Image 1: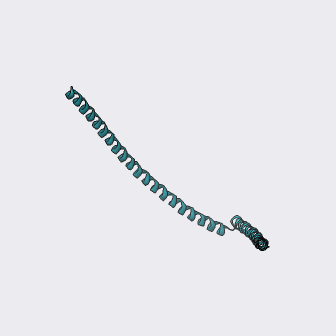
Image 2: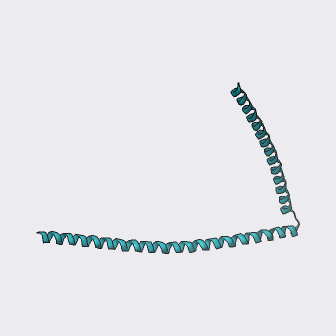
Length: 127
C-alpha cells in the first residue's frame, strides 16, 4: 500500500505541476496577444504620422532617416574596406605559402635526384 500511496501522491503533484504550466502558458499567450495589439497600434500611429501633410514632421522624419542611413552606409563602407584589407593580406599569405611549397618541392626533387645518383654510383662501384 505504501508504494501505491507514493505513486498516487506523485501523480497528484505532477497533475498540479501540469495545471500550473498550462495556466502559465495561457497567461503568456494572453500577454503575447496584448503586446501584438500594442505593436500594431504603434505601427498604425507611426504610419499616420509619416503620412501626415505636416511638412515639418515629414522633413524631420526624412532628416532623421537620412542621418541613420548615412551612418549605416559609412559603417558598411568601413566593413568593406576592412574585408578588402583582410583579402589582400590573405593573398600575400597564400603567395608566401605557395612559394614555400615550391621551394620544398624543388628540394625534394634535388634530394631524390641525388639519392638516385648515389644508388647508381653504388651499383657501379659494386660491379
